[in-house]
Image (cartoon, rainbow, N blue to C red; front, side, top):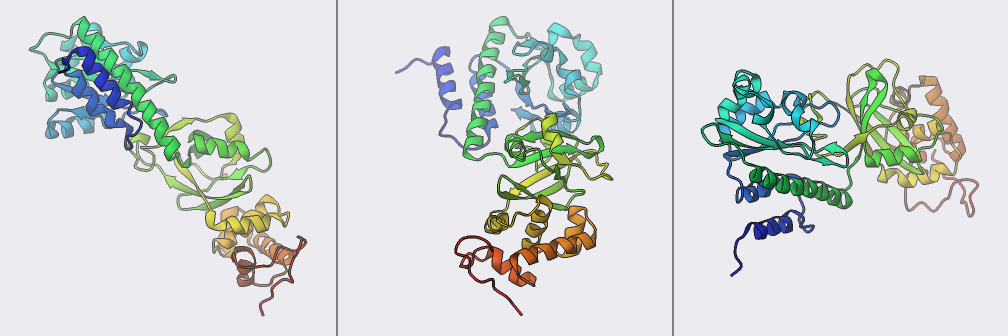
Length: 379
């Protein structure tokens, strides 16, 4: 029988958290972390608090072995706290274990907002660590012990550092695997009021890098609005969603997405609506697979980017007035663009246009291409 030594427990923990066959939420590592840590460190409860990478608000923390009513009591208060106020000592010393008693007078903490939360838990000995992953703080890991117990010893701090360090790397590893298996959607967090992109997913960054330096791509002006972008020969529907939550981490649309900081190059390729003054919004890009055949056939017409956008909106069933509003052009200009598209295809109605560009069984090719058949006309 294999003896259950600390070394054996550590190897078992590593095997579990780095298991690349596991799918699901990367934060599933957290229960394993605290269960394994307890084999070497005595504590009453544990927490993990993730920091929002954009504005440093905090998410509702993961709490290990704290009663449900206590969780509700501190979650509402804790998720609004500025992590700089609570975790500043740890942020100043990333990847190091810091005990609360090393930097604060417990009696003073007892009187503050954090003390109110700690009174609910009944713990006043605490040690925490903020590991950096690729230069960014992953979040704060902490364990707590009742004030009637002794403070955490050096060997317990060393064990805590070891387990948390591997947990942080395993969370990052699992997130990387998840992105390989199921890439994040192309998404941007924008601040129209400041005329800038706050952050974006890696997929969105790659798409905008392919967009080139021609006409800037128009952003939707309000929630529910739609734009159509054509990038590297592929069509995308661009939707906008209002973000009302204080933290991205507490918004269902963004909680599971991995954002990276924006760049000036990215922002230069986008055009904000002049009257848009929203503080923050989420922009999602959806690949228009159903419009791919239409886009391929329209590409042969040599349309400008704006006229191709008009044509793709027609494929999506948008009327001329909605096309004008979406594209930010006058109704007369929209009608002129539609007429030009019709003329190039030698069709005279929306039905004939859709048949020409979307019907897969259509044998006809676009005018001017090899083997073109006579254009279909509907009367």
